Image 1 (cartoon, rainbow, N blue to C red):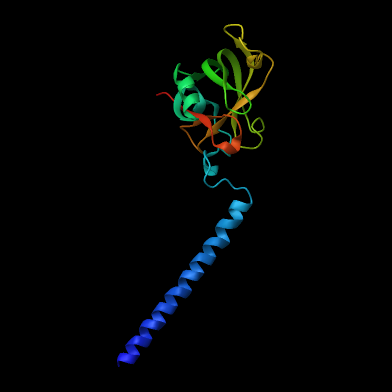
Image 2 (image 1 turned 135 degrees about the vertical axis):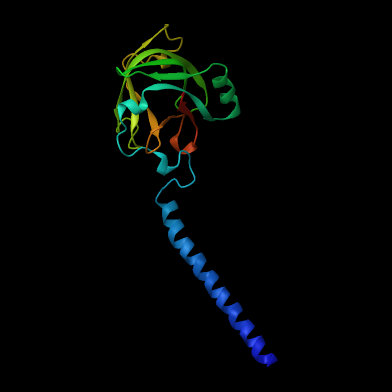
Length: 188
């Protein structure tokens, strides 16, 4: 009887070991290919947060303020010195107020954009990341202090986050793989 109880325990223990091995194998089978294919599982914004369907213009109209700063602390301080704001109007004009612009590596705050431009929806301006608000025909309210911040004849975009309204905007800072950027939310 004691021997039979002991054998039953051994069988259960062996069955649990086999089950654990299967769980580990299944987990590896699904997770490793995702990581190896460059699917940004743990990055921000999450891959499921990008807008894949063209939003309605009216769902984007409004004023946006900073919701989240995903930046190194010294850059956060620089951005917080002023209140960046993006105001998308129904007539497809936009007013940019103290919008921070960084160097190409996202390591230095180059200037702040304040002025007007036109906006439209585009799914190509940010290299396939999803839908973006594309800005063009920018006119600064003051002469740029830095030649790198002269956007007069430029087109640039800011990502639209969420698959439905209310949408958020996300400005990638530096390398997209570094998970640094500024997230804006619509002001009620």
